[in-house]
Amino acid sequence: MKSTGRKFLTAFAVFAVVLLFAAAALVLLFDPFYHYHGPLPGLKSVVTKSEYQCIGTIRNFAYDSVMAGSSTAENYNNRWFDEAFGCTTVKAIKSSGTTADLKYYLDEAQATHELKYVFYSLDPFSLNGDPDQNFVNENMPLYLFDKNPLNDVKYLLNKDVIFEDIPYQLAVNFLEDHDEGTSYNWAQSKTFSKEGTLSHYYRTEQITEPAAPESYQKRVDKNIALLTQQLEAHPETTWYFLIPPYSMLWWDNAYRTGELEQYRYILQSAMETLTAYPNARVYNFMHEEEIVLNLDNYMDLIHFSQDINYYLVEQAAADSAEYRVTAENADQHMEKIDAMTEKILTEEMPALFEEKD
Image 1 (spheres, rainbow, N blue to C red):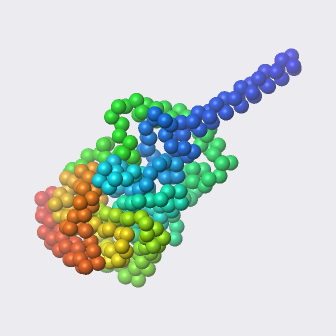
Image 2 (cartoon, one colour):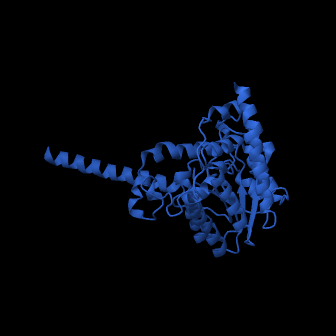
């Protein structure tokens, strides 16, 4: 009896080991987070989880250009850049990403690829974040970032990866209309409307005193320096900085929370500094009233529809004089922003809330 029991336990142990190796081999083969390699021959890339897949695509995909940004950049289609600029693009996305967050991804990309272009969604809030700390911390799946094979077991034997991510990857590949360029896209599940946008805005009655310049200027300057360091380190790469248009509700909120002058400083400093570099092109869409004042373009204060993303690419590819910022016209862009802000605060918002009442 003891001999039979030992044989059973031995057989079970062998079976369990074989099963574990088979599971690991399955993950290694299909690699839905692209931790080891790009898509298998004949399979399209399926990228929907930026925190888990972004670092793998940056390290292991074939490309020569990067689209970097926060959630406002997720609805760009990579193919728009590829077709307009003659390149092959992947996204480097971090939701609510700061300048330091995006620098981490771009450093990883530059370490393994010679970049032709960087298309950079220059969100004002990203230049207001912590310049000394990026997002790679205990809250992230560090086993995908740290290049330590010893902790890859967290990926190779992850039941969610085996029973959810791999089946999803394969299922999507059977969809004939799957567009690889729509990486991390969320627009398809959202509604863009004036009513919906307003439902996301709590308008404070109290107007806060503006923050003291010394409370933010040093931080902003350090963030802009992170960008200029990259411009100087990679003169062979052309950088397209796209300043996205936030809704008039965002401008109203900035005024009421005492942050308006702070964001003016961010925008002016960024435009004046970046336009001094020959490998940088800056396009400012913050003053485009046809977008900013039309709340049907938005789902909340800053997130706009995919049509707006396409328009920004189209105008940058055409090198639109209306949006191109240069050292000579940066002041004019700020004057347009100031005029639009004044219009929002004195005309648009009073009319909007009278209308609501």
